[in-house]
Every structure is written in C-alpha cells, then in structure tokens.
Image (cartoon, rainbow, N blue to C red; front, top):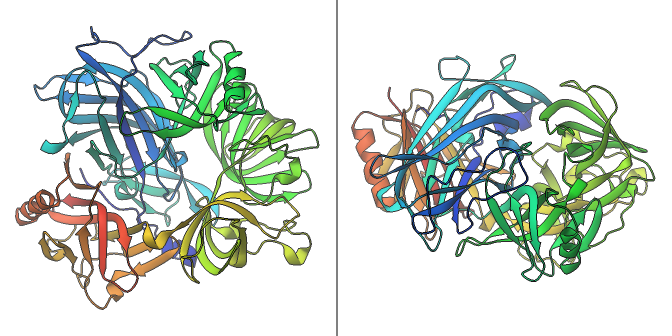
Length: 633
C-alpha cells in the first residue's frame, strides 16, 4: 500500500505554509492483553465470544485506539474488523461490533475498545478493516474548520479498506495463561495522507500506514468507559462492562479499574476524592455510565484511575454535550469554533461552524482533577478546553449550534499550549504561543480576559503561572508545551495556570521528509548501523524536509552537513510500508538490511517519518521511531 506523509498545500498564510512542511505523530492503536476475562453486563449486544475457551486454553485481548497531535480537526471513520492470525494460518476476530472512531479526538490518550478472549498461540499478523463510506473528516483552513474528502491515490472516494500487518519474527504475540502480552498497532495518519487545501472541497489523499509492535514506544494516558457492573470498596476497585466511544449498547468484556486515595471522582456533577468517591459510586445502580482516565502498568497490565467520571458527568447520559475550546466570551455567552456534539441519543458528530454556549449564575463548573474546586462561571475563559452540558435549543446543522447550559454544567478540561519561551522567571513563564490544543492563536479573541483592556492576554507574550514547577532549563526561544487551565475570565494576568511544563528540546523532535508521489531511488547517501544519511540535495525532495521541535521548524536542506537519522536505545520501533504490506522491526540492523534490499530491488522511498531527540547545532536525529514508506515507480 502507498503511504504519503501529510502536507498542507496552502500559500495564503505563513502559519499554513509552515504546517505544510510538518509531519507529526498520528493515530496509534494499542492492543493489550489482560488477565481480565470477557463477561456479562447490563444487556445490549452479546459479549466478545469465548470461542470455547477455558482458563487454560485462552487469554484476553484488550484493544485500544489513540491519536497523537496532527493536522486533522476531526477524522471519524468506522472500524469494522480487527483480526489476528496465528502461525498455523487460523484467524481470530477480536472486534465483535462496528466502532465509530474520531482519531483526531484521541490526541493525548488511548481508548480501550474491547476485551476479547482468544485461543492460546503465537500470532504473527494482524488485519484491520476501515469503512470510509460515511467518514467525516475536517481540517483547518485560514482558521475555519472545513470538510475534507478522503480519496485514494487515483482520486476515487475510499470505501472499505483492509490493511494487513506482518509482525517481525521477534515481535510475535504469544497468548498463554499467566502474564498478559501487549501489542501496539500504529495507524499513522500523518504518514497516511497528503492533504490538498487548494481544492474545493479539500482533498485528503489516503493510503493508510499501520505498523505493529509488542512493546509500546510512547507512554499514553488511557481511558476506559462502560456501564458499572460492581464496586469492591475493600479492594479499592470497580468493574465495568467495556463500552467505548459512546457506543449505545455494546458489551465488550468486563474490565477492572483500580483506584487510590488520590483518585478524583466527579459523579452527577459533584466532586469526591479517594474512598469517598468510591463509596458514592458503590451507591449507584448497575448500568451507571462511567469513564476513567489513568495509567496502564506495562509490567502486569493493571489499570489505575487518576480521574473517574460517573452518572450524568459522562456525556450522553442526561444532557446534550459539546466539547472544544472557547475562542471568545461576551458576558454569559461562550463561542467555540468547531467542536464535537454528543446528543442524548448517543449520536456523535463534529460541528464545523461556531457553537454558542449559554451559561448563567446557576451553571455548575468543575475541573479535571477534582479537588472540590467550587468554581463559578467566571472561571471559564478564552482558550480553555471544555465539556459543556445542557440542552440544544434548536436543530443543529453542520455549521451552527446553540447549547443552553444555564441549568447545566461546564467541566474545564486540561488544556495544552505549545510555544516558545519569551522569558522565564521563578513562578512565571511568558510564551509566544504556537497553538492552543492544536489551534492557532489567531482564531482566539482574548478581549475581556484581563483585569483591564491593557491586561488582556497577548498570544505573543502569554503569561503562564508555573508555581513550583521546574523551569530552570528554559531559556528564551526554548520550545515548550504546557498543560493546565486558562486563568478566570477578567482576572489575567497571569493568563494561564500551568500544571505541567514540558521542555521539547530534551524530549521529542519530529522529522518529516517526502520525495513526491513517485519517490526516490536514492534517498540516502549511506545506510548502515550508525544511521541513515539523508541526501539533502536530492532533486526529488518535495515540500517536506523539516524537523519540528514544538513550535520550532528546522529545514534540513539548510544544514551545514547532511542529516543523519541514528537509532536510539531502549524502546524503539522501525517499519517499512509498501503497497499491500507493512513490515515491523525491533532491531535497527534488520530494518536497514531490509530497506537496502527493497531499494536495490527497484522500490523507491516515498516518505520518511521519525521521532526522537535532536540537539541544537547538531545534524543527527536520534530516533526511537522510524517509518519509511516505499512505492513502485
């Protein structure tokens, strides 16, 4: 199968031109094997079939989906099948129901989607089926969300697409009683699309690129959702019948959620902590909706919740819900530009126009992380990511929506900033903003955010309170990412209260290179155990030949010497994709040998995506993830 790295072909704005050069991480599909078995729940579709299994002949497969930051505002497609193939050629279906997935919404977390009991054995390959017949894809054009049509390399609309993944010999999935196994599929949206914004409608040329590994390269927050089955107060845990993506009635296997004294609960709009929250949950009837966010322990595959939502604090239970970022506020009227609507009937869709949210003195306001904040509506400010619970006051269209939350509630979600440091002092960092939750600052109207007009938030000098967070390594122009919450409306400065500050210089650099649709037969000056040396002067290089470090973009063609992509240590993953197949490697040497064989055999390199670390002033990217897309000229 072909694979083209994401490029945005738009010359109307500098920001859009810069985004044209980026390839950023995209969808990751995580499959984790757990000791939990498939079980019963509160009605609905049948649970995952046991295939005649017993405790000694089968294990349980947990399947999850996620997406890293990318250039799609929404990317909803149906996942209809996920099969694993054993070494003897037999296959097992692990996804018993059709799942509607918006990969763009899963930017910073992994969603567990099913718990399937499957026979013991060595599984050597996987196959996933995607149905694009009713796909809903949106991108941003000059600050406005617009629809994109997904087509194949010939321009024909995509329909049902089957993707086959062959696992490396060292990466077979072994199912056996005892310690669960782990498999991760990486559905790379960035390396799977070429987006042309110059067409009307926007065209996204798609050739999905999926790789697989038994050892996750990146750690992610995990979300598990489903109706309550039981609570064990003594064990500080509860059991749900897994039901992801607001699926109306699927029963996809029982799953145990562990809690601690610090777990934050929000149940029916009321906040609790630790044992108090678990006791409140224990008083709820079976079938109560729940959603938990936390960490999956890679050693024993146990899951511990840091935050738990239950009852009508979960979208779709009692209210209509919209989620997105506030781009403007005037009195008690909030404006969101582009956001997701979840109706009481569990229907979900992306609204591309402006969404108006009405609030009032009786609107309940809570915040991710709990703490019994007792917030007032004034806490909601511009830039803040929210879930608003209320009533849709008129039939919504794809472009407009009004939600009345005057008798409802608003939950403030952890908001993500990226930018470069203007100044850094103890307790306060000023940023030149690049994005707010992936949206460019120009779409936000910060009028009214300050104690006076002169104090309104300035995206070129956005003040972030950092408290006791470590910022000693930050210097002017350092690229950073900050997680936290916008300061209350009308009370800036500071403009934002940070919970976490991430210095990109020591964490992640993203490389994207494209050699055009026909590819290049000689993309590298050399290939060996020390790395791949990119030919910076290759005439086949297209628009994409850049390293992105937070908001900073480096053109590798301007380097004093050719760029080297060298293998890192620890958890790592390398992959080759070509028409019809993807090969996965743990060992760099095997990856390079296979790449050399393919190029010598007549294949061309079409695109390369890598992520790792890049030291300023160097010409070496030390990568823990490298994917090369090949094509036949």
